[in-house]
Structure formats: structure tokens, C-alpha cells
Length: 222
Image 1 (cartoon, rainbow, N blue to C red):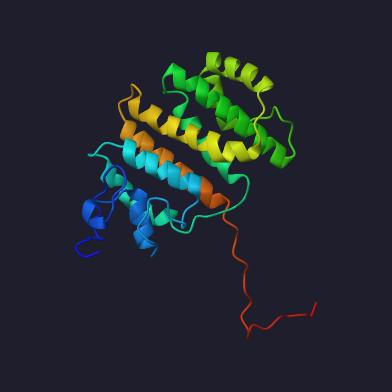
Image 2: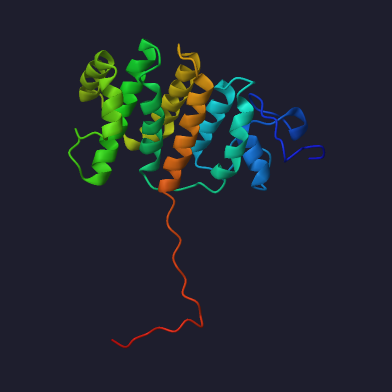
């Protein structure tokens, strides 16, 4: 670990055998968390870690250093609430859907609709109810949305399959789509996507119980 400068981390694409060979976003997170060197550390929710790896690899060399200050914020984000996977997936797709290629729009629209149905089921809402931000994203690609609704009316996938396969693939499709989109600011968009995914994941971290001090007096009088 010698000669590994913590003050100015230099991030690069892909996996690295050791810090001397470089570091990606999640490898640096594993180092800061005191875990064995890995781009799949236990300190971060698997899907969020996937978002970070994808953003790290799809951001340009010139823009990647901007990601470094976000690294500490993913450490310890391991909520197990069932909302996490569909919600993190949704915020990624919401930002990607309006700008990605037509082929990707169809893939992402399906993943978004399936995820929204899972969220509706979790929340006890009608299965056709959709988050306003997701609806806005779907409205931006009407042809893809029409096809996706017809497709998902016949195809039914379980929660386990969505979390294990569909969500990670959709996230990668969203990130790669933004990096290849005809936009002037792909690096900025990828930064915002990762930051949004982090903030969404934070929402589902259980609140720590408030501990009463041992010498704190309790007023039981009316």
C-alpha cells in the first residue's frame, strides 16, 4: 500500500490487482473501508457499487477525478430494504431515458415499468401507479413506452430475477447510454446520476435509535 496517495486519488478504468496498478472508484472505497482490495467490497450495497463501477468506467479520463470526493459517501451504505433496488434503478433510468439511443430506450422503459410495479406492490398501491419522475421519463419516449407496456403486460418476472439480473443490466445500459449519447455534458450527467443513486440509497438506511443518557432525568409530572 506504500506510495498510495489518499489526498489526491487517481481513478482509472477497470479492475486493478493492487493500488500500485491504479484504482477504480470501488477499489478505493474498499481501501478506505479497511477491507481487502476489491471492486466488489462489502461496505456498499451491490447495486450502488455497480452504478459506481459503471460510472467510473464510462466517465472520460478528464472527468473521472471529479468522482473521487464521492467515494467516502458510499462506504457503509448497505441498506437491505426491498425498495432499494427498484428505486436506485429508477433514478438511473429517469436520467438516462430521455437522451439514450432508441434501442436502449426500449430496454430501459421495460426495466422502469417492471421496477415501478414492484414498488407499487411494496407500497400497497395500484400496480399501474407510477412515480411522477418515472412517468415524466416515460412520457419523453412515447414509442418505447407503448411497446414496453405491451411487452410487460405479458412478461412477468419475479423480484429475485429483477434484483439479480434486470436491475444491474438496466443500470449498466443507462450509464453506457449516457456516455454515448449525443449530449454536450456526458461526464456531468454521469456524475449527477451517481450522486442521485447515492442519495437514494441513503434514504433507505435505517435510522439509528436515539439513546437516552444514563444521567438524564425524566420529568414524569404533568
